[in-house]
Amino acid sequence: MPTVMTHAVVGLGLGKVFTARKLPWPFWILTAVLPMVPDLDVLAFGVGIPYQSPFGHRGFTHSLCFALVLSLTAAVLFSRRCRMPWTALAGFFFLITAAHGILDALTDGGRGVALFWPFDSTRYFFPWRPIKVSPIGLKFFREAGWKTLASEFLWVWLPTGVLVGAVLLVRRVGVPLALCTGQAGRLPYGDQGMPPGTNQSSQGG
Ligand SMILES: [Zn+2]
Image (cartoon, rainbow, N blue to C red; front, side):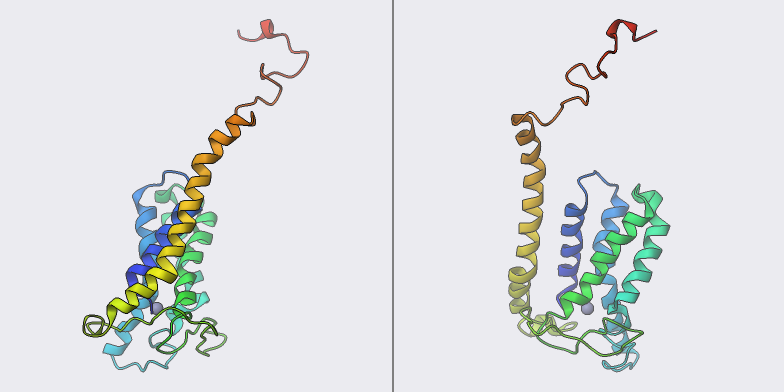
């Protein structure tokens, strides 16, 4: 797996891309936490569930089906607190949670990802796997954890940062550009803002 914080970074980055609205803190907490949830399955090692089991690491919690159930549940429960329709929230939460399995399938170690559980328990990898797999638990500090971080920075953090930067730039520059070209602020019926033939003096009352 990429490290859990990398999954959170992807969620937060896509959150900035998803909306320009100022959203309350529950949205951002969920945006960071939901992409990390699939890796709770490492607890399976502690209770003797083998890696290759559908209930082992990279098993059902990494599937698209699990992402769908988790995102729908979170969206329905928190749509009011996030001040957003649950449908839009569910779509976004699904994207960032499903991205976890996709990123894991791009790593160069461990077992593949049960993306299509419960219909297919096959563990999948992409043919191209540039991300170094993260050692699990304390091994991260004993082994070459920094190599994992360097590879995640190159293949995940950097592209996410570039995407977020580009979107923020377009949002910021887009408005002045529209002003320069006279496209922004133009009223639908010309500068008076009224349909032709309307007598301005007849308004009010
Ligand atoms: Zn994972």
